[in-house]
Length: 280
Image 1 (tube, rainbow, N blue to C red):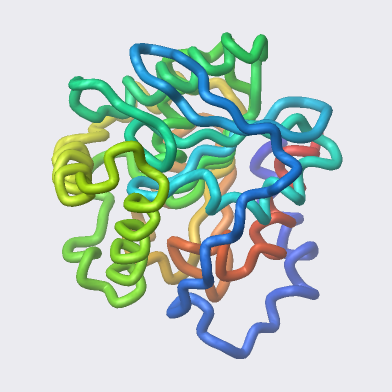
Image 2 (cartoon, rainbow, N blue to C red; image 1 turned 45 degrees about the vertical axis):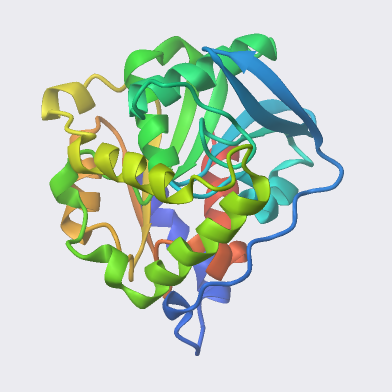
């Protein structure tokens, strides 16, 4: 059933993919936070985790990529809020959230998400993750299967070799890193520590994740593996491998976009997201 998604989705894409400009070379502005969302801080797992909620319906948690923050999801929040209870969160040490002395790790950040769900009295939620957020989503599906419904994993890697070498030198990605530094200085409780923050996150990227086929094959949740056809960071063959290895997973490659597809073409990204989450 989940494989059928890939077969029928091109019909949905047809009216909205006739794009003339090379969107994959752009980095649109970070959206403003959704003003109607109710923001708060949760004391979980030894840290203060910033989150916001909006909407009613089945819960969906949006998990952002490394170095960024939950503001990046504003277009997706607006698309989801009419039919879902949406939860956005700044991962530990990112955005407005704090961290403790423990090294960054995907298991640890997944534990933070579960603790937040418990605090919010949410038993089970779908996950939409981008990059590091997608990795956290897959981690949740493996380690907390009773807390996770569907998982949309956009631009994930499951082994370190799935990342393109020298991605930080790509012009679009380099602009993102520079922008993230300015946002960190504006939002963080430790605004002068961006260089140390990047060094610590980079160490995690050098060593994690490194999941085996057997680990990925334990995932029972419905998973859609998504990427842009011009992703600067993730190797295409690796994206295809993830979809082929997770039982029943679907694969969707979005046209004319990159690692930042949800900013570059939010209508396209949102159509895919809503079709997957709201489909039977």
